[in-house]
Length: 231
Ligand SMILES: C[S@@+](CC[C@H](N)C(=O)[O-])C[C@H]1O[C@@H](n2cnc3c(N)ncnc32)[C@H](O)[C@@H]1O
Image (cartoon, rainbow, N blue to C red; front, side, top):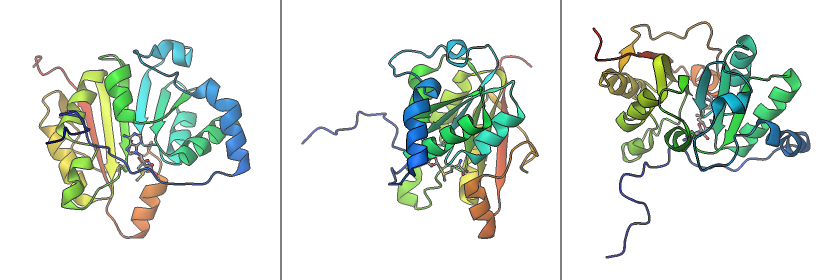
C-alpha cells in the first residue's frame, strides 16, 4: 500500500485555485508595492507590531477576495490593523492597488493560505479579531470537509484571539450558516451573539451582492472570545 501524500490530520484545502488575469496596471502595482505591504516569508512567528509599525489591534481576514470590503473597513477604522490573506493572486493585486490609491497604512497582505498563517505564524492571544466573509460554501456533501469553518479551525481561532476578541463569519449559504453557528456554539471559549443580521460597520462584499441578487439569505455569525474558567 502506498503512503498518503497528505500527513494525517492535515486540513483539506478550503479553496480551489482559480485562474485569473490581471491588467497591466495591477501587475505593476503588485511588483512595485507588494514588498512594502506583504507579510515577510516564514518560517517563524510574525512580529505584528513590527509588521504594522505600531501596536494597534490586529484583525486577520481570511479570503479577502477582490478586497472591496477589506478596503472599506480598513479606511473606516484606521486604528485597527488588517492582515488580509487571499490565495487568488488577482484579488491580492486588486487589494494592493486599492491600498496604494487610498493611501492606507493599516493593511498588510498574505498571498497564501490564511489558515496556515494562523496556525504557523500567529502567537496565541495575538489577534483582536478574525473575519471570514463568504467563505467558499462547498455545497456538495462530499466536499463539506473542505469548508473552512470547522471545529478545528474554530479552536485555532479561539487560541489566537485575545480575550474579548471577535470571530466574525458571514455566509449566504444557509446550511453553512447552521454549521458555523453549531461549531462556534460548541466551543466554550466563545460567546455567540444572538443577532444574525449584518452589523452596519460590515459593508456588503462582492460575493454577498451576488448572493443577494440570487435571492440568498445572508447570515452573520459573531462571537466573542471568553474565558470559560470565569463565571
Ligand atoms: C467566495 S470568495 C469570498 C471573497 C470575499 N470575502 C467576498 O465576500 O467577496 C472566498 C474567497 O476565499 C479565498 N480562500 C478560501 N480559503 C482560503 C484560505 N484558506 N486562505 C486564503 N484565502 C482563502 C478564495 O480564494 C476566495 O477568494
